[in-house]
Every structure is written in C-alpha cells, then in structure tokens.
Length: 487
Image (tube, rainbow, N blue to C red; front, side):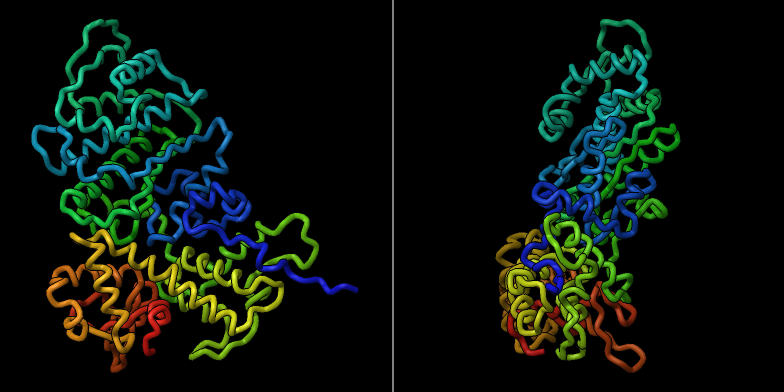
C-alpha cells in the first residue's frame, strides 16, 4: 500500500505581500483561504467597525479585499475604495470651506469629500428610493463635475479658490432656472439633507485605505489626517442617526491613530477593530499559524490525492530543534518575525523555495530560508518604514542602517552609534528614526524592572514603558541574522 503524504510545499500558496496583488493573482486565498482575525471583515460588513487599526502588514487591506470578493456581483452590497496613498492629503488644509483656514475648515473639507463619494454610491443603488429632489440635485452635481467626472484629486485645487454655483432649489422640488452661489460648507449641509432623504436596505461601505504610506512627516499632514478622523466619526454618527446602512471605514496604522491631532479618535471605542497579532506580547503565534495554514489549505490543487492538510506545524514543522532557547521549529521561525502576517508569509515563501517536498523541514534547510528572508525582505521592509520620515530620508536611512550593520553587537545606544553618523544625522533626526524603528518592531528598548533587565519590543513587552532616547537598544533577530552581528 502506498503511504499517503501531505502536499509538497512547492505547490502551496501562502499569498502575496500586498493584499491587492493577492486578490488579483490568487483570489481563492482571500475567499476560501481568508482567516478573519478579530472578526474584522465580519464587523466591517455589519457596519459596527468604523476603523481597522494595526501595524503595516497586519491585514487591514486584506479584510477589504476579502469583502470586495465576497460582495462582487451582489446588487445589495456596495464597496467603494478610496486609496489615499497618492492623494495630496496635506493640501486638504488649503480648501476654502470656512471663513478662516484651520482644523474646523479642514474637517469640513473632508466631510465635503467623503459625503460626495457616499452620495455617488447611494445614487448608484438600483434598490434605493430616491425622491425627485435627490435626482435633480445629483444632476446638478454631475453638471458641476463634482461626481461622475474626473477624480476628486484633480478637482479640489480649483475648489480651494472659487465659490461654486449650484441650482439648490431642485433638492426641495422647487423649479428654478437660477443658480445660487453656495460655498463648500453649504454643500455639506445640502448633501446631508439629500442623503437623509434616501431609503435603502443595501449595505454601502466607503473604505479609506492607503494610509500606511503616510508617516505624518509635516504639520499640515498631521492636521489633515486628524481632521479626516474627526470627519469620518461625524459622518458615521450622522448615518447611524438617519438609519442608513452606510459606513465610512478607516484602515489606519496604530501609531498614526494614536498620535495625529484629533478630537474624536478616542470616541471610536467599540467601533474599532485592533489587529494585534501579538495579543499584547503574550501570544504563542497560534493565530498567525492558523492564517498561513488556512491559505495553504485553500491552495491545495483539487487533483491532489493524499493526506488532507491541516496545521502546517504538524505537517511540515514538527522536527525538534536546539537553537538557543527554542526547542521547536515554529517558535524559532516566529522569532524572526514581528508577529505580523506579512512577515510570516514572506518567511514561509522562502521556506518553500528551500524545501519543496512533503516531508518535515530540516533545521539546516530552515536556517537557509531564514537567512534569505532576513537579508532580502526584512531589511527592505524596515528601510521602507523609515524612508519618508525626514528630509533627505533615503540617504539618512541608508547611513543609519549602514552604521547599525557595522556595530560589533546587537546591543547599542546613541553614544556608541554617534561616531558613525556625526555630521550626517543630527540628534533630532536620529531620535525620529530610532523611535520609528521601535514603532515598527525593528529594535527593542532595554529597561530595568524589579532588579532584572528586560527588553521591550513593540509586539512583546516584558516590563512597563515605551521608547526612550537615552536607553540601551537591542536589534531584532532578523537584523542580527542579516548583518551577521554578535548575539
């Protein structure tokens, strides 16, 4: 009798590092192979989630791509994505909404832009009941080029300089051939009135994505993003009060959500889904392994005849090892990640390039895969998270990473680093870069507590406290491996 085996690792698909690319190349991994951590997609679909918060690579965009696939072809589900990665966010502060520029004006400008997109989505709903006034108002907006025309980013520069003219009488059913001059602030109120008169049972979602590419490096960008949070909260409260099944959702990094100037971010409370895969630093990684196992299982070819695939750890990673404090392969592999889905997907893609068969991964093979992952993916990922923080960022980030890679050990402090960066990176810039390295999990902070020395990473804290510029630091395992530093 032929002994049945698990599928060869070479035929399994662990997904792409970018959720949109994964939806294009392997949509089954985001449908049948989707693992709904913290019920993010479910809560978004129900309209109870107004914000999905987590580090870059935590799966925020994946939840939206999953819903896009689930809702595709349905006449009662509408998902409109607004990708802000290439949108001039800081310039929203220049739109002339109120009499004076400032946070209130910027918030109203965001409300204006968000309500336009929501209104366009509602009017496209064939099952919605629209009054004659709404239809006429929509025609006015189309005629003015505010909806159904060029992308908003090509229009708002003009809006910041002019007073717009609309036939506002059509909303109330009045016949009028005379246009009335109205400001963007007045249009916000007209839009709210129009939206509140619409009746529909269809679910509408306006998802704001692409914010991972922002690092709030300027005051105007911080002000704009804070106003976006406040505007989203205001509109969601309005939609709830008028009984419409519509939501504005923000997919946003935790550090940005906590730090940008906002009067309403603390109010999100029960409406926020936190994608914390480290469970506050106490996770064994079970949820991450469930995620990659679910993806791998969905990718098994239908023609395969062998053992049904379940947990990857049992199928391929059950060989004991003896590397430092680690006795099993899964724990050791996770120690080279920041407890993020993107990291583990990247690592498992390297594993399957080294070990293509159906048997257990050997320690020697695992070390080759880890080395490749550290030298390629991990170093690039950290560099990407730093490059836009400061002026001349690319050069200064390269200077900092070169200096760190030349250290004699994984442990360092600002004093030991100074000779390598003198005249190239000043103290303020260094503080910004090191704090961001801490925020993205690239280094830990050494702290003494209870007579013992502890190392706090953002995803694993063994003592109280956060970042400190005068502390001793410890580089992440993956950087130590990539740069061949002393442990």
